[in-house]
Structure formats: structure tokens, C-alpha cells
Length: 377
Ligand SMILES: Cc1ncc(COP(=O)(O)O)c(C=O)c1O
Image 1: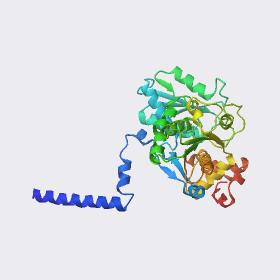
Image 2: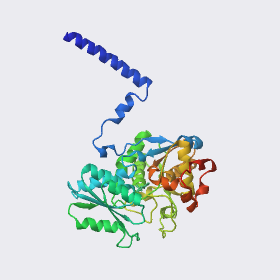
Image 3: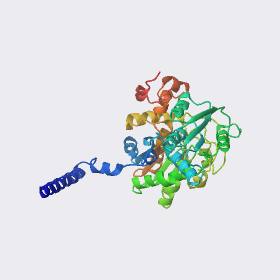
Image 4: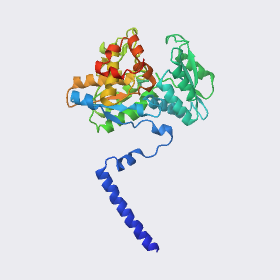
């Protein structure tokens, strides 16, 4: 009885092995996917390892492989999950943060959301300072993710009441608390040296000719540039992509002259008035920079949606516009990588609103045949 049972099992196993082999051969989604996914330990294990998406239309039109790292697929919805995880891990490793401790950051955007997820999953409290010019939606979202939020008057960085300085002072007043200081804490850059850069190198099997992205803290651009330059012996060309109102394009193209910040952009999370500690070590590795106007970023929001099926925020679309320009610059047959930082969900009431686009004088930036996507009044 028992023997028969074993033989039956062995036959069934052989049969299922054949089926598995056939599946693997005939269905590329079969075994491969189950091997790739595995089980990750908690939310933090789901950060990173994002797909690298070939932007088909732009690739075909330029004759290059133009690839976007799908950072909107992180659990908190943006590239900033990586930095959030690394600044918290760094504080833990340095003994600054112990169980039940408090993380404090000055941020109006994705870093706060990333930190909120990471802090909840690790059992830390989170306090966020932000300028009081930010939308109620952002404040509500952070509060519903468990953060204590302080909207404070929007004053320049050199004013002691600036939200970043207030965050720092708050941490100094508490025990077992850390100001994670995303702009100048190089654990942020390290996240991209240890994860984003190697992932791009691995996913392209080392066949990457150029990389471009915009900077907020500079962590992504610096870390990925450092890794790709090192892995390729300096061969990968790396370019900063800069929105209006940021000083970095002129800093890089003038060979290091820092000018006063002037103008503004509709993009969120990017643009910078100084060279942060995250960017500083790698700024000289850059091969150049590109200025991308808001008109081009907006046009790309609609093109990515229509041509690629990708619903992306404006910083991602600025990056795609930059990648398209870099592809034309480096020429056919090259592989150009950029970053799809977050989705359009949090910005839809602006990016797809006729009133908002008109107020920003960006309605004409939307190609005529794509105006059908402007569905909000
Ligand atoms: C939407 C978005 N894109 C891009 C960035 C820039 O990334 P980094 O801070 O690594 O320069 C940020 C940063 O907050 C962001 O929120």
C-alpha cells in the first residue's frame, strides 16, 4: 500500500517536473516570476528592486534603448522610500535610534511618506516639519500614516525658523530621537550606491551608456552616478537634469559658479539652491547638465500617459524629457537610463486641470491631440 503510494507520488512528481519544465519553456511568466518574487521580510524588504521599463515609443523614435526605473512601484510610491530606509538604518547602526524612538525630518513630500511607512513598520514615532504653504492633502496624508505634522511659516533656509532648522531643534529636545536630515545625510546617497545603481547595472547587464535624472537632495543622482562610473570604469555618461528655479544647471555648465536662486517650477521634489553634502562628492563626476523647461515636463506627462501608458508625476517626466534629449545626444544604438520617481496620483488635481494649466500658462504645452486627457475643470 505504502509502496504504491510512493510510486504514485514519484510519478506525479515526475509529471509535475515535466510540467514545470514545459511551463518554463513555453510560458515566460510561469516559473520565472515565482522565482523572482520570493518572500520579503516586512515592508522594508519590499523597497527597491523595481523594474526597469523600456519606454517603447521614445526608444523606437530615438533608436536608443530608453529605460525608466519604476520607482513609483516602491511601497510608499516613490524613489524616496530608499532614502527613508537608509537614513533610519544609519541612525540605528550609529546607536542614535533605539526601539520606541522618534524620527524627525523636514519635508513636504515623498521623504515624509517613505519615512512614515518605514517608521510604522519598525515601530518608531515620526515628526514632520513642513512649510505651511503645502496643501492640506499632504498634511492629511502624513497624519493618516501616523506622523505628527507641524506646518510652520515658509521662510528661507538662512532663517532659524525654516522648517529644517525647527526639525533639528525638535530632535535635540528629545531623548532617543534623530533628525534624519535628508539633504546632508549621506546615508541617503549610500542608498543609491548600494541599491539603485547596482540594480540598473544588473538589469542592463552592464550595457548602459548614459544616465540622467533631476535632483532634490541629490542622493539619487550622486549615488547612481558614483556606482555606474565605478562599475564601468568611467564609461557611463551621467547628466544632471534641472528644472527652472534651480541653480545646479548653471553651476555645472559654468564649471562651479553658484548663482542666486531665481524663478520657480511646477515640478515638485526637485530643484536646488545649493550643492548638498549628498551631491558634493560626486558633482565632478558629471559629464554635463540639461535644463528642462516646465513646458517640456508637462508635454511629457501627457506623452508618457498616451504613448507609454505611464501615469507619472512631473519630476519623472522631466527625467524622461532629459533621457530623450540625452538619447539624441549620444546617438542611435545606445542605452539611456532614467528614473520614474513617482506616479501622478498625488498631483492629478493640478496636472490634469484646465484651470491650473491655464494659470501656469502651460495649457499650450499640451499637444493638441493629447488635450483630451485634460479632464478636470
Ligand atoms: C517626486 C520626486 N522626484 C525626485 C526627487 C529627487 O530625489 P533626490 O532627493 O534623491 O535628489 C524627489 C525628492 O524628494 C521627489 O520627491
